Image (cartoon, rainbow, N blue to C red; front, side, top):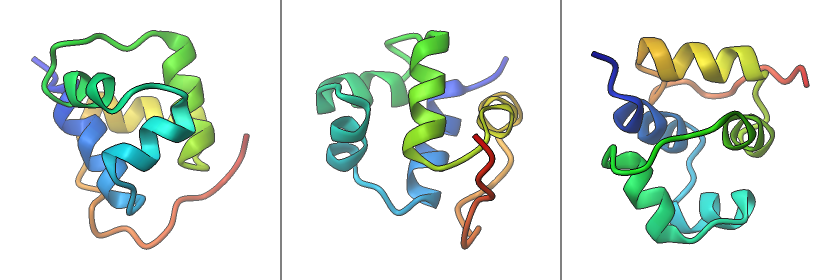
Length: 82
């Protein structure tokens, strides 16, 4: 089973964002970010799109990262392509 919360957190950390800064970018509360990272809240397509915009990543890359859980914490940058 995929761990979307863990993968969501990896994406956030790879972008050097705090829960607070990502929450602000996504127009959510930090408690929502925390619930996503702890697999207590599901993500919808709109949230995945907003995430790709906030992280300046192509949405297909965000989806792949969420599903595959590839370790992105050491990546220095992500290609844009919205």
